[in-house]
Image (cartoon, rainbow, N blue to C red; front, top):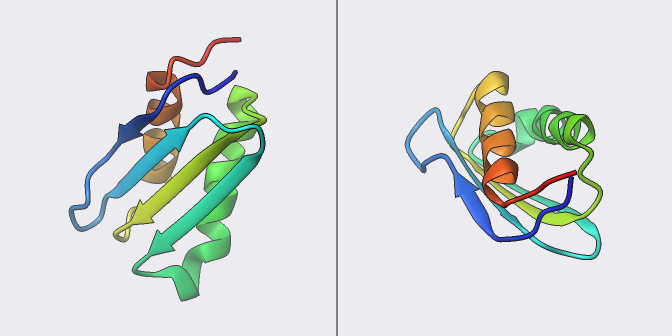
Length: 88
């Protein structure tokens, strides 16, 4: 799946995550989180698992986490990618 457009999902509310995806020639993941020191590796792993599942090999993925649980992070990333007009 290729990211063709810029798209977002989520909010900046407590316990949610705001995800922005943009087209790029390389894969770049940036994470900002209120719990970065404790959970940065877990957040990155959640994002990467969705990217692998959807076959995304390039794009700029920006994560602004406000304490979301794993399933919320994965759902927001998947939604943003699908909104970006990606297709196989």
